Length: 338
Image (cartoon, rainbow, N blue to C red):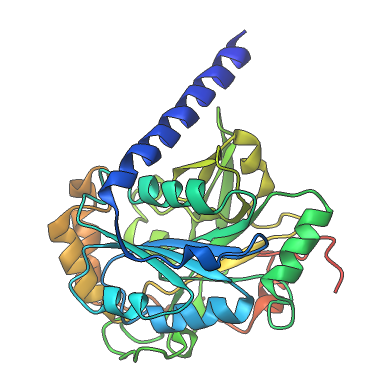
């Protein structure tokens, strides 16, 4: 009986999240609506951004190369050239809002509405501007090839480990130019340890570890970042992310990813947070208090980022490509034969 009750509560929660998204549509103002060009087989990318004019040129180039057909962006009150840059792109539809990012479930209310409206029945990436998805054979196999395989095996989501990259120098010591490949600067990562835990009642995974835990949260590891995500989903208007892209409803979608070491197909989100611009952004976000449910718990973390620390240590591994990550057990090609 308790299992039936839990399923009922999760259905109620999902309906509540969808209602929130439907209501949040009033917070969005159209800047450039090119959604009429979205085809029935389009592969979409959805993101909420703020002051990302430096990162976005490479972000767009990366996902265009992979085969994204159309981008749906929400600009949350940027004060740089983000809105102008995106509004000028022929494959971008753009909305803006000055509403609270935190009160909109850290942007999920806005992106869920766009997915309900435009992504039903389509493969959809949900990303942050500092995330670059890679997967087995991504240099030669497009997202179209990947999603065709997932359709063939009747899988509706692909999970990924968020792998945090960093420079050898202090994070405030290497300059980054818009359009530059961030991997030219962020050349290292922690190959482990990573630990995984399946959580009830949503059956969502919880993966932790990596450089941020090592450097910033060694004394309280459970406060460290969650590193598992479900960034690529064959969308249905009744789906909803619960916590960033870490967990979804219906809960069966969460079983698409088992974390590092899993045997079926998975990818990696190369996390490019630790470019030098993170110093200025951390100072701003500490004042805005929009990125954590209890920002006071992370005040010291922001202070350490603002100081521009060196994250590299003697066990750091130089990034070489997806085959290296597969050998380390951080992604898998599963049964995908190319």
